[in-house]
Amino acid sequence: MKRVALVWRGDPRAAPPPRETHRLRGVFDALERRGLAVEGVVYSDDVVDEVRDRLAQFDAVLVWIDPITDGRDRSRLDPMLRDLARRGVVVSAHPNVILQIGTKEVLYRTRHMGWGTDTRLYATFAEFRDALPIVLAEGQPRVLKQYRGNGGNGVWKVEMVPNAPSRVRARHAQRGSVEAELDLSQFIEQCARYFDGDGRIVDQPYQWRLVDGIVRCYLVRDRVEGFGEQLINALFPAPPDAAPNEAPQPGPRLYYPASRPDFQRLKRILESEWVPELCRTVGVEGAELPLLWDADFMYGPKTPSGDDTYVLCEINVSAVSPFPDGVLEPLADAVLARLASHRTTANE
Image 1 (cartoon, rainbow, N blue to C red):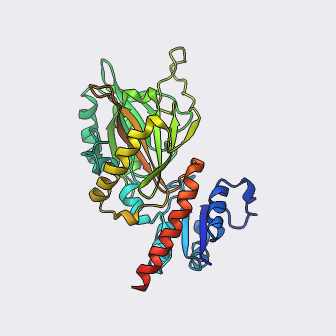
Image 2 (cartoon, rainbow, N blue to C red; image 1 turned 90 degrees about the vertical axis):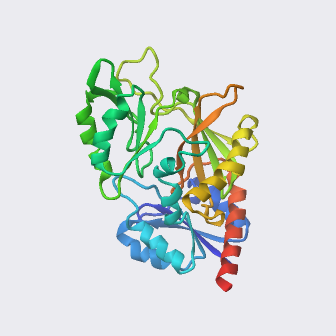
Image 3 (cartoon, helix red, strand yellow; image 1 turned 45 degrees about the horizontal axis):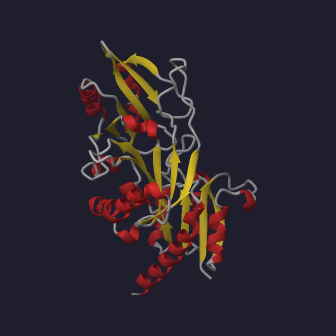
């Protein structure tokens, strides 16, 4: 019987949560219905060697660990996962694939695609310091995104204050953040930390149709298997009667099956055009795509005929959760298919 590990970050010494209440309960159940032996494995940086030895006994390892959690990153986890993959374990998402499609840099690398926009990349702090004042002087608000992050961490909306060329209005996308007015030089300096290590910043124009919401497409490999919709997020404009520094409250994310009628055009374009072009652009084979990932889209300007356009906001690969129930059975089938394909390749 093939063995599959579901991995998340936590305290390995603590009692495991009951499966009945675990966020991955549906994944456990769907995989077991396919005849797979499924176990949960809790990861922590201080026991990386012990976890490696345990995971080496599995045929596949599916990982749900964010890029940044309470100041902890994946700098110890990812080398361990690469080592497991070299030993023949199926790892999803593979850290190399995450670097190719699951960081904010993918917005810059695919800016020429149908989902792209005027996206800029600042690879060094000096480049950022010199370029941002010029970009903001064009008069449009911009959204800055650090290279790797989640939960709005390191995502900022920034714009010049009218008639005050050295002042900006800035708001962090982390929940509860409020808009602040400060010197442009001060804002630039506080972004220096995003260039630590291999850090960089991606810069996109603010999308004025953000008030219409964000659509999340959940994919199993190259097929859309469900949708999410969030009508209010952290960079949503505050209500007209709100206090100047009042933070907008994020709305709930609603979940829908892949058959939702008004998203079928987006589904078709994503599957038939954008995913293949993404793979060609970043150098990922279709078989290497994560078993479960998602792509967030903002609404762009409508076409002359009234159709919606879409602008890629981000791709999430490291820890996709929660998700619609409709992804569970396709995900289980994809795990089986990946195991079968992996075994055939290994035997050649």
